[in-house]
Length: 278
Ligand SMILES: NC(=O)c1ccc[n+]([C@@H]2O[C@H](COP(=O)([O-])OP(=O)(O)OC[C@H]3O[C@@H](n4cnc5c(N)ncnc54)[C@H](OP(=O)(O)O)[C@@H]3O)[C@@H](O)[C@H]2O)c1
Image 1 (cartoon, protein in one colour):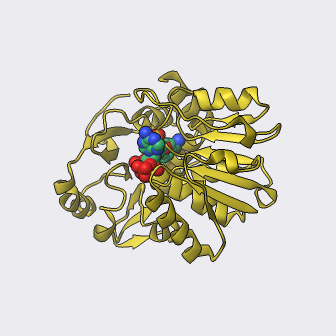
Image 2 (cartoon, helix red, strand yellow):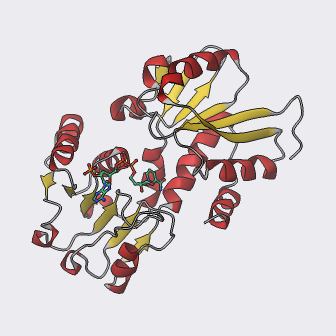
């Protein structure tokens, strides 16, 4: 890719940001499509968010991805929010037009793609984790009308806040299961790990009782590095279908790419680029 005076940039902002795989994925797409664009990661500490977002309209930056810890902090400085960004109070994609700077949440679509082969309304689901990703997962499962939803989390209070949030949005019943009492559950159809347990660099693994998995359960780990976690290995040995976090990562990125460029992103190229650096 030749960088010259006409090259336009897209960026991901976070703090820290060096771990981000988004530059690899988006630069592969720009290159494949022959676009004179380049995607870079910018580390912005929290004190700089207002200046950065307010300044965007005066630049020719084509788009911004937002990651931890800025997904909520950018919101007050945007002109408009998509429906899902507004409900989840989390923005991971920003589009800059001449008139407006608009925030979107593409994590929901990314997770929705993970469920595309599943008849969600006939399923029971267990969500492990109640942080930012857990919120997007609980929202998506509820939006797709999952039959029953159980949420567990290390910190009970946070799980209960998430349950309250889902109740407010969808007016539905969700059961809290204490983190150390998962064996009280019957086997579920879908299990989602939305914690960093099992991730490269984290010593602890996600331990789940074998009694909650049966032949045909779908086990989804949002962790993508390593591609096969101990949780997925165990689930697979018990007859579960498994999916790691790569699909969600690719499809949230693909949706961002479409929002910025109005072009059809090269899905396979982006996925291969990601897998190549894991
Ligand atoms: N594949 C994708 O596209 C994608 C997208 C988003 C996130 N993710 C992954 O999803 C995971 C969660 O991300 P996030 O943004 O939701 O993070 P977050 O907002 O910081 O939430 C972390 C969650 O994990 C729990 N947790 C953390 N350490 C734990 C431990 N040692 N034992 C038990 N629970 C623990 C937290 O529980 P407490 O409430 O008790 O602290 C909380 O529920 C990360 O691994 C992230 O990389 C993947």
